[in-house]
Image (cartoon, rainbow, N blue to C red; front, side):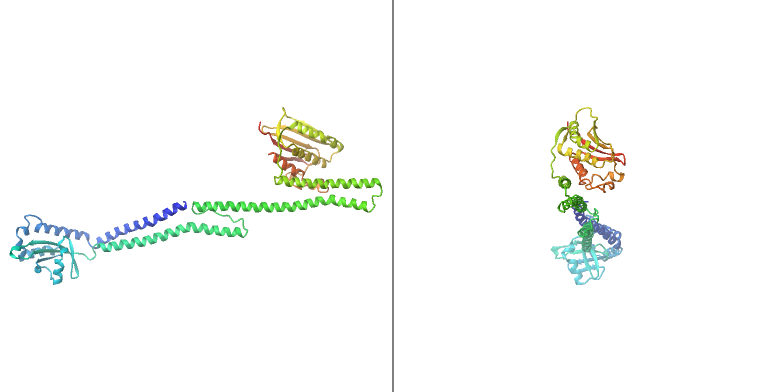
Length: 481
């Protein structure tokens, strides 16, 4: 449920629940009051009084209409009293202010109460002494010509003290509604706040944990829809923050490793350069031939340092996506064949035979950054040359196709790579244990190759067998058309 719906429900509950409780309480009050007041007996008394009234004045031929003077007859008065005794009632006959007959003793005040104008209405109520009565009053006779005062008959039926009282009923109903309204508001407020405050307290605790650096503290979704969405967004934020910190730490570790590795790799050629320069300064190279040898070695080592620095800068730019690729449609077969022809003489000088095999049935043109892709091919071939351990080395470049890609395979018959190292050779500065005794390059060649291939939306991987050789495979998408 969302907060809007919960607010509407809570407001509706604070009104509907008190009304329902009040209605039920009122019905119970009426039922109990009716039982206590013996409502059935009161109804029978009312019927008896109504019947007696009909016999006395209700019809044209009724007793007092036919003979009004009969009201003064003592036997008739006693008969009325006997009828009212059955109902525990009283009979009073007044002539003006004078009491002609009364079945109970009346004070002057009681007479005044009976003579009030309100009593002239049927079913009026009057209190005589400690007893309350329902009064039925009837004018029996009046002869103004002879100066007679009005004669009035009063039939009094006692009211049970426990009988229904409208004032008490309204007060009771009002109190019930007020108390139930306060209770419903308290309950609704408690549960409404509980559904909001509990998740907010948990969020506050989570925020404190995150502030203290505990990014593993999970934020659980709970509460209403809006609160759950807030929890979900904060959990995403926590995960992203955790990943960001993890990435930052990883970059920091990589930076440290980068500094350590490049420092180590640069130290070897720099140390060699310093040694040969010291040899020249100390006069160890005392012949023109020896001096030339020392200078050539210094130049070669300087080139090695220069290459390592270039590789490092290139990798850093590729890693930060700061070098845009310049793609152009290229015939892949001709592109590879031209590249191999350029390096074939150098490979022959190193005792390595290089072969090119193509299984393509038709010429295939794919989008390439020619310069950078050629660097990938040459890096892989040069890596194979560096670690070649056979007297008759062979490097074979094969080209084949699948439905969606072009596969380039560069295979050599060198020493191979240990199985545990194959998956890591494309990491920067990684060298297998067999290569650590001799530094042969910057250690970034295959890492740069991976960055360039992935920049072509391709994939690069290696398959190797120790002592048999290594195959590096490159999968490049065909592109559109």
